[in-house]
Image (cartoon, rainbow, N blue to C red; front, side, top):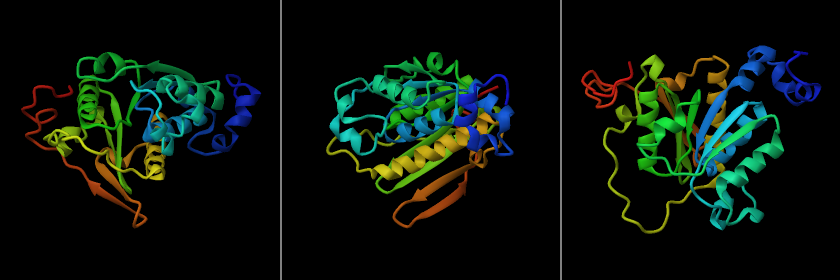
Length: 257
């Protein structure tokens, strides 16, 4: 057993320690990892649980909301007893109960273009587990400028998609895929989401993040994975850089060096 881990940790992580691509060196990399998850909802709940269970040593969590009854259909970090509590508080308690070796740092706020750089700067990998487009754009552009790897997922109805954006590799950025924001939300009833679909995509975010922390490549840095829950089907599509992209294109003023 590696001297840096306790016997309890050896037993806790035993089933992944026997993996050739993990072992004690990989477990040390996970313990040294610093991962920020933006959103403690359906996506973030699944991703955070599995990142903590895997032994990621430092988890950051951004969420500015309180727990509501309608959240419990998909946001499995929270319980009935947590209604009205800040999501970051209930999530931190749930993760600490699961793995006390994991440090959880919380940010009870809403991300904006102004505060993204200061929040993401201390982390290795950032997960976009949010639920609105303005936050996604602010996070994606902030991560690109700060040189942070972004693992982005989104869900709606019975479907979801996932991609990895790595400025260090010069991969297509978020704006290459969605150059223009959608029209403003006109209001009305919220969009439907099957809770288990959010769980599927959040788990896939955790898988990609663990691979990145272990130093393993992610094919999703240049591709988009789409999941169709109704047809039980995955599809992987290439993503291409847009030469005229205002963020990463040849004439973009905010290119990552």
